[in-house]
Image (tube, rainbow, N blue to C red; front, top):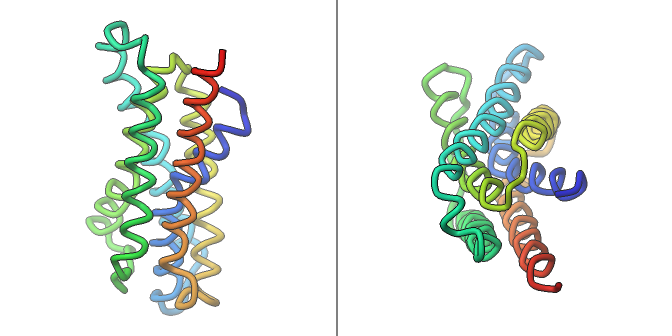
Length: 184
């Protein structure tokens, strides 16, 4: 899997966390830099951790599904992307900040569940996980940090659109995987 694809996956996966970050930037009064780093680090950490967990789980049964693993990766990415699109259209974001540890932990896990499925897909595709997980985590950290400051300025105008963009990116990557594995 090439670097551009990994960055695309990182960007796609970070959209849920970005949406929450933008809303937190909008909601938090008198935003401090340490709070922005705390939120961005938590989201980035869990976005990096979840693919490793999914990849590890996939190792145990990868050999049984090698002949059709690309279809599983495609299905998971489309499912996750579709869910993100649906939620971006259906749901309005709750206007709660996540500076308290329990809320931050819950939101970090909730926004990174999609990364668990991507890690499972990486396992099926026999992609080594450490480098992609680090890239996904760093991309999420940077995007969320920017999102918090964007939210501080214009969050009320763009919050729900980010899930739509992230979902579309993941579906496009799923299609790319199927084309690469069936074109030869």
